[in-house]
Every structure is written in structure tokens, then in C-alpha cells.
Length: 629
Image 1 (cartoon, rainbow, N blue to C red):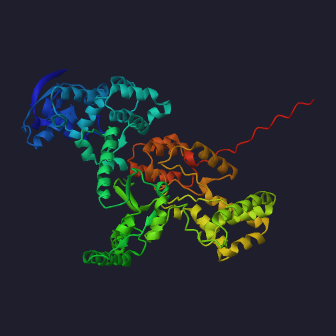
Image 2 (image 1 turned 120 degrees about the vertical axis):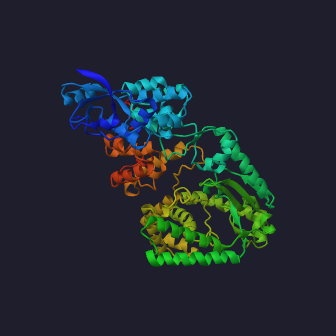
Image 3 (image 1 turned 180 degrees about the vertical axis):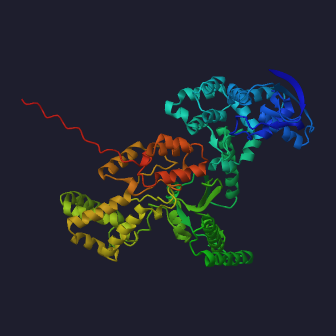
């Protein structure tokens, strides 16, 4: 039997028979805040013990919260507590009944309840104070409450995880959320990163070079919206108005170009994505460099002293990554200051121009002193060209033509060329020597010292601009070793190279031809280029013919791959290589921690992204033999 009575808080003590042991002290401050805001919503169950004390057999956490409020001076020490006084019941049984029969509130019910309070005019901080939590957590719960009711219903039924529901908060529109859910394949519906990627595919990452160039503040000032992920502290967000971003970038580039035009260049052009491929056709004018100023010289001396001190303590290659990075920054700054400021004389500007674009780090990139092919002759004549545009060649030397006219010389040499065609075509051995000579000549000798009469032009791809640090890769080291071996075998002077080629056996010529052919391979898919599927397909066919195993040349590290892709792509790699369960276990890690863990899991596994996997060799269809007559 029980009776209702009010008992001073000072007379209440916890019971040792309370069945709730695990987590009994968790969340006491939050419970106290709720009691302070809403009152004690459920009475305590007590029984009289010796003296005038009452043992709380059901409601131990509520008692602890009331004691906490008393210590904080938020209620009186003898605060009257409504209680059910038990008479004869077994205390452990009462405690068990209360804890077993009470169901915890579903998280969806909690954030929907928060939303109702917000709709009633209460702000996040006020709601947080009433429930003993933080304003950020309330904002997160309110954002969850804004997800489509259809998706929340799936979550309540256990068909979607809370992490996946969180991912949908990056889109505010219910139809967009529902459309994305329907479009996702079954496996992706359990991957929060995949959900976020689908919902933000039309936005621009706030940490992209384009967004950094425009500036988040300038974009916001122009009325652009920035979408944030409240559940990812590392996320910088997305810029939702791509058209506005591109408009602001164009305007900023135009202003920069206008300023550079005032410097007196022959031409100024805007190319947002500058690249080596786009610039390789330009020559370079010669700047004048002024010596460092007294202030710059003092900075050089101070930096040199600092660098020397670091190397004295930690060596030239410190093990500590932070110290090593700082030493590298010091050395880079010294080199920059020592080079002196570049100035361009008017004579150089007369035949050169400047290109304006966006650097990979989001800064303004200005390339001054570029020479177009049509201006190369004038630049050479003025003596202002450091290099000339590729393919223009040097000024041809005068030929010893005696008293013959230029027209006759052209006629006669055309006749000889015509005669060489069928003659060489009938001499495979000499043709092989001529092809090897033409291809290897510019690779090993100054092209202005000697020139082949064969119009074969071997172009080598510049890989450094596409893959930072590629010079240190195993493949480039192996190729450099091959070059060194050939350099040691070839004659020192270009004039002697033809005789050398003529004297070699077929095997030697073919080996050198293979090296030259390798030098011409360019299977890079550059960002500024349109898709070239035929070239990519042939690269795959060539890799298959060579049985190329990229796992021998490349490993998925933080620098080479993992730190440059989304969390979803990292988890896909782990799922494929280790197991889907391993990927699930890592899914909640922050990006940096996930990259480090994935790097260890994938090390030595031979895993490759799809782009680096060698396809199976193609087998040509066997022609059908003709039917017998």
C-alpha cells in the first residue's frame, strides 16, 4: 500500500537496493535542468527507515538531480518533494518494476518535441537551458526535425540510421531529400558520405580554389547562401549559387586584368584555369631583377640564422613533420627574397604579354612575360627572349646554295625529298635507323645543334604540373636510370649520332626506339581539356598489352589519394579491400583520422582506384573462314 506525502529533501537518502547501477550518475546536470524548468514530473517512491529518514527505492537519479539543484542554491535544502510512501512492498521489486516498464524516448520524438518548443517562440539557448544541454545540440535536433517526414518515418521504423538522417540535413527541401533517397542505390543508403555527395553535387565546395578566390565574405555580401553541415565540425560548407560564384570570379579576374593592362604589355588574356598544357606553347621574356633591398637582406639573414639553428638541433631533415615544414618554409622564403624582384623593361613588354588566372590555392595567378609564336622572331631580334615558343624553332642558318635562286633551291630539294620517299620505304633497316635518330636526337642533344630531315616530332608530357612530387616516384626513378644508361652509350656530339645509329644492330635500335616511344606517351586527363575517350581507351589497351601492374608503382597514401577524395570514396576502398564491416567501423571518424586509418588498412594490399586498374587484354574476333565452294 502507498500513501502520498511531501517530504523535505534533507530527509531523503538513496537506497542501496536500487537496481539501476550502470549509468546512474550520467546526465544528472541535464536532468536537474529539466526539473528546474518543468518541475518534478514523476514522484519518488520511498520507505521509512530508522529515525525520520526516508530511503528512495525508485527515483535515485531524480533524487541526485534535486540534491544537485540544492548545492547550486537553485532550490532550498529542505525543498518539499512529493513522494509515494511504501508500506511493506519489496523495495528491489518496486525499483525493478519502475526501470523495466519505463521506455526511453525515441530520438525522433525528442527533436520533434524541440521543434514544437521552437515553433512556440523559444530560441535554441532557452531550450538548451530547460533541458540541460547546449545550444548547438538543440540546433542539430531542430535541423533533424526539418528533414522530410517520410524519411523520419523510415528512421523511426529502423529502415534508416541516425547518421544517414543527419546527412539529409544538408538539403532543406523535402522533395530534394526524398528524390535523393529514391535515386540512391541500396548499398549507398547506408553511407552518409554518399548521401551528402548526391545532395550537394550542384554546389561548389567552400574550400575549392574557385570559392577561395571569390571569398566567402564577398559571396555572402552579394546575397549568396552558404550551406553548412551542423554535424561535421570539419566541414566548411558549400556555396549554393554556382552562377554567382562564377560571375564574381569573372569580375575579379577582369579587375586584375585591367590593372595588368596598365603595365604596358602587348596583350593581356584571362584564362581562369592556368595549366602547363595551356602555357607550353608560349616562350618567356627575360626580366630584370633588382638586388634585395636592405630590409629584405636583413630578413634573409634572420631567416638563415633561424634555419641554421633548426638544422643544428634537428638535422637537415627533421623527423618532426611540423618542424620539417617550418624549415622548408624558411628555405622557400630565403630563395624568394634572394632572387630579387622582377621588373620588365619596355623592350620586353613590346613583344610579350600576361596571362591572368586562378592558382590552385585560390590566389590570383599572373604569368607575365609570355611570348606568342608570332612574336618570337621580334623577341629574339630584340634580345629579350629567355626561351621561344615550342615548335617555332631557331632562326634557320643560311644554306650554301652558290649562285642558285631560292626558288630553284626549293625546287631541287623537293625533287630530292620525293626520291627519298620510295627509296627509304624500300629499305626497312635504314628507315629504322632514321626513325630512331629523329626521335632520340631532341631527347639527348640540343635541338639547335643538329636536326633530322624526318618530320617526326616527339612530344613528352610534362607530368610535374599534373602530379606534385612525381619526380620522387618509383616510376620516374626507373625511367631516369634508363636514360642514364643510354646517355652513357651514345656519342657525346650530335653530329656523330647518325653514324652511331647506322652502325648498331637491329636489337639496339629497337631498344632505343622503345625508350623514345615511352617518352612520347601522354595518357594524362587534364582538367582544362575536353574528354578524349579514344586516347584513354588506347592507354588502357597499351597497359593491357604490357601487363602493367600499377600496384608495383603506386600506393594509396594520404598524399597520393586518400587525403584528396571524399570520405565516401575512402570508405568504399576500405570496404572493397578489407570488408564492409571495417568501413562501417571507420565511418564515424573525422576526415584526418579516417585517412590515417585507411592508409594503414590499404598498405601493401594492392588496391587501386578504378582509373589505375589495367583492363583485360582485348582478344580480336577470329575471322570466319570462307565457305568452301
